[in-house]
Length: 228
Image 1 (tube, rainbow, N blue to C red):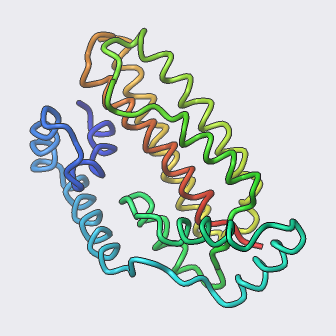
Image 2 (image 1 turned 60 degrees about the horizontal axis):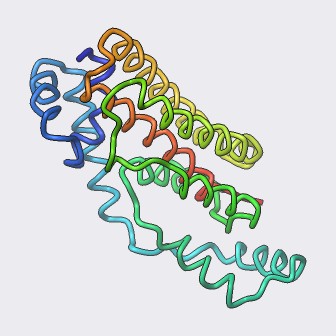
């Protein structure tokens, strides 16, 4: 595995989610790579900060006024909103979500608001259609079907995010774009490696995991960073 492929696996390595067959090569690389070793320490620090975050986040006072106005305009039942709101504000943090949330919370003037109904429905469809890691295809040819689903989901989420970008803090946008570039580089490298070794199940799992991270990052960002 090359440096860039391993670098993108560091999140799963730090959280303990990386499959056992890949942990050894990644650990060996980290032991001899100052860049990756430093990134591992940075990820551990992010996890530590995320662990200190409250289990739930009370929305800013002005958000409720905007939400109430939206409810009145759209004639949304308060009871329905309460259920959606509770799930939104208390969603569990993954490492990627925690990193994005820390950037957002540190951006002056940035507030969290409830998603619009249309965007919620589109994001929900993406979550429902996203492949799971339970049945990773054994060959690149079989993975193509799963990959097409990832690509469709990414396109939907990217469209939602493009509509929201103007409401985000510049540093948040820069951080997100940098993360997406890193993910895309890892996808390309894994794709090229698989072209040379189409039956390598470890590479297929890495590619699938990378796509899942991209979809998850986009989905959580659209859910957490909508403002008015």
